[in-house]
Structure formats: C-alpha cells, structure tokens
Image 1 (cartoon, one colour):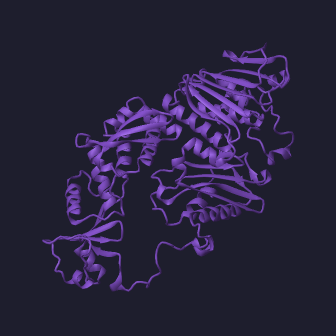
Image 2: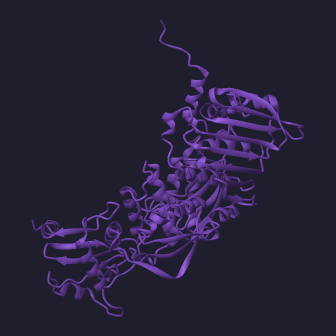
Length: 574
C-alpha cells in the first residue's frame, strides 16, 4: 500500500496559512496590500481585541465583479502574474494568490465588493467547515473584507497568540508602515470602537513623517536622497545623539514593500562608523526604488525578505547616501570611500606630544591647572585617593591592589538599576512644570496601558489625548533624561517582554528587570559629563554597596583593576 498521499485541499490551505499568517497583523498586511494594488486612495481599518476577534478593511479601490470575487478564494488565483517571466518583474504587493484562501482556511471571512458603476455588490461568506455562501448586497464603492476569530479551528496555533496589547501593537506597526510607504493614501485605524490613528493623505514623505511621528521627533532625523544608475535611495536617518539602546524604528522599504535585508542594514551602520557607541543603534526609515527585474521578492513566504542582483552596488549607494546626510560638509569633510578603516573621531597618532596629551586631567575645580609633573610627583598612595578623568567616559583611582579604572556611565547604571529593583529606595521628584510629550501611536498605547506599572518605578505618566502624555514626576536621577527617547525605549521593553511570552502580571520579574535596565540607561549622568571628586567618591561608595558591582545591567564591566602584578608584567618586571 502506498505511503504517499495527496493532501486534502483544506489541509493544503492550512499549511499555506502557516507560511503567510502568523498573527492578526499578518492578515491585515495581506488585506492592505490588496487594497493598495486595487488603487485605493482611502483605507479604513477596524479591529477588536487586537485583531483576534475582528479585522475589517474597507477601501475605495477598483473592486471585483462576481466571477473574480468567487475565484479570488481559490489557491494560486491572482491577477498579478500571467507567466513565468512575471515572477521576476513584480511591481505589485500581493502576487502569490495564496493570501485569501489561506486566511479563509483559519478564520471566518466575508468579502463584499463591486466594480465602479455596478448596480449591486457581491457578498461571499466562508465560515465553519469552509462552507461558501454567495449573495447580492447593496452597492458600495470598492471592497470590504471582514475577518473574524483568527485560528478558531486551529487551537494549537491560537494558543501562541499574545495578549491583546501585544497583538494590537503589531497591528498598529503594520498600519503605520503602510501609511508611511504610501503618503498619498488616507489611512484610519480604530480598535474596540475607539480611533487610534487617522492619517489623511499628504503630498510628500516628510509630511507623513511628521503626521505619524510628530514634528518634534522629525527634528532628530536627517533626510537624504541619492540616485545612481537607475537606483534611487531616500528617507531619514537619526542624528548620532538620538542613537537608541535597541534596534527599534529601523525600517527598510524596497519598492515601498517593508522588508529586512542585511546588505542595507550593514550599509547604514557602516556609514555611521564610530560616531555612535558600539552599544547604540541608529533609527532610520530607508526607501530603495529599484527596477523589479533587479530584485527577487519571491524568496520568503511572507515577503519579508528580498535578494538583490548586485548587492555590492546597493551597499555602496546606501552607505554613501547616509554618510553624506550625516556629514553635510560634503567635499570639505571625509568622503565615504575614506571612511572604511578610519576612525574619523580620533586624531592621527603623534599629533599630541606625550606631555601635552589633553585626555588625562585631574578632577579639579575650574581654573585649577595640574601639570604633568604634578601628576607624577604628587606621591599618590592608597591613603590619598584623588580621581583622574581618562578621556570622556572613564576615571581612575589608585588602590592598595593597583590601578582601578571605572566607566562612570556603566557604574551609575548599576547603582540606579538596583535602586529601581528595590523600589523602596526610589525618590520620585514632582516636576515644577509637567512635561507634555507626543509619542508615536504604538508607543503611546503601550505606555498608557502600563502607566500603573511605571508609577511603581517612580514615573508618573497620564494620557492627554492625541497620542500625548503628561509626565508629572520621575525618579530624581532621571530629571535630565531625554524623556521622549526614554518613553519610546520603555514601550519597546514592554512589547519585548510580552512578545517573548510574559503575559498578564505586569509586575513580573522579567519585565521589571527589563524596564529598570532601560530607565537606568537613561540616567542623568552620561559618559561625557565630568563629575567632581565628591560626586565620584559617592559613586564609588554606592557601587561598593551594589549586589553585582562589577557589571552594568547589560553585562558590560563597570570597573577594571590593573593589579600590581599585571602592571609589573606590563613593564617587564616579572
């Protein structure tokens, strides 16, 4: 008896669903793509329970007649490709012909559509048991699709859905990405009956940036544009000071399709070179327009990845475009070709004489000058412990065991992190003038949703409407922090923990550690802020009291001891 059998159609569709549908946001992405390909200029979206209960997409696109509406639920039925050659000249967003049948296999779906000038709409409903019902309906413009109860018939997959908050965050991100890529289309999104996003069509990408992310955030970015040999790259990259601790707000669009691509990501990071710390990440919104024949979009079931015909050419163009945006002096500054292998923040060796080196200075009051001779003849012992700054981030002191070098930023992170974990030692400081901060829509909803949890950490935040929050108090160590960046970072941490499986109890240990580490990283004392001897002495005392004084919350060393034995070996005395 044969062991090989042809799978039934329903099971084939469910397998396809497993490839293209991971969560409600995956369904929404496919539906929006269809609306865009249909020429819609207005797309209205409604969701319930993060899309788990309902996703409704209504557009004013071209619509379909009865025959096409019925046929669109068949596997591999598509208007986007006609021949093998079309596979390598994809100019639309949806082209596989699998999305609607895959969605219908794991949800209850209805589609109502009509072409322009039609007297009636056709309505197709597919529910339990894949039973299809076809009827007429009053005429509407375009197409409306309602998807209910995702994975209702595949409980093994439904249990992997996250909380409503997490799924809503992914829904919001999907809509924001599409709205960003298509500024000429009007997008709206509501959830559980309340409006979340309303983005009318605008004339250009910069207007859309301000509309979605606020004018304040837009000021933290440089725009760029460069064309070469039929390639066009444009978008926005963050100023070096806006570098984040996580890879958030990094968006790549190839022919306006959101994708991930290591060639493009590497080009961006390479262009930043050494102007941001190794543990910080730039934010960017990067668009690449390329001849569809020069890029393969058919390498990933969910269309999240692409492959270029000539990746080196792409890398050079993007690297040059971003570098020029970050270095507006043009020919007067260093060229992108010279960037590789050169630390353009470091002066050439030998420019400073040893006795004229400005990177070593004593922590002394302003106006008090210490010569190099004073430094070497001051008779330093373990009983007299002055502190010396080394560069902008480190200071050193002599102990009975040798030379102790401290990273002041990492040390302060550890101190504040442990205070936040204990909670009882936090001292919230009311702000004389409360701060009003406008956040991106996804981050706004995450912060408002978990404001009570943040309050336990000394951060008093309340909603103000229109994606604005009011900050009334915060831990005193954070009074100089970049509050907008901090709140965006906290929202990323909340989503990160929920996505990794933390649900329900928002005081869970994993979430507490994640948020405490992010708050500590935004503390007031930055690596380049000089501290006096009194402040450094207090930092050393607090660090000694910490449970894990040798590492910051991210695992980096806070202090390194060069022992007397190590020093002796360095000087060939052992």
